[in-house]
Length: 104
Image (cartoon, rainbow, N blue to C red; front, side):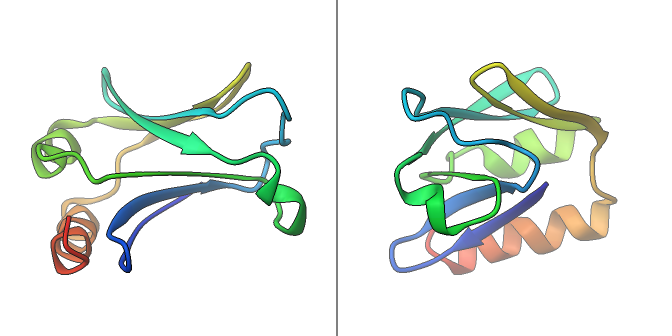
């Protein structure tokens, strides 16, 4: 599972190579501890990629959610990746900086 913030437009992106696209499913969630961040997957766009990618706006409280999270997971339909231990604090800081640099 990879988590990134991209710009143009600014957005939070989560990629899970192990997920299989489900044509009737567009709900994708990033679980940061007990808090879900709602993202959207486009299963029709996924055909050219490995796995499934969820995208959405960066939540206003993203830094706090990430800082407090002891674990992360991704949910898409009936598929789940994780829980995985949350990244080390230095990596969390880099991700938050990337989100703010992207306009999140």
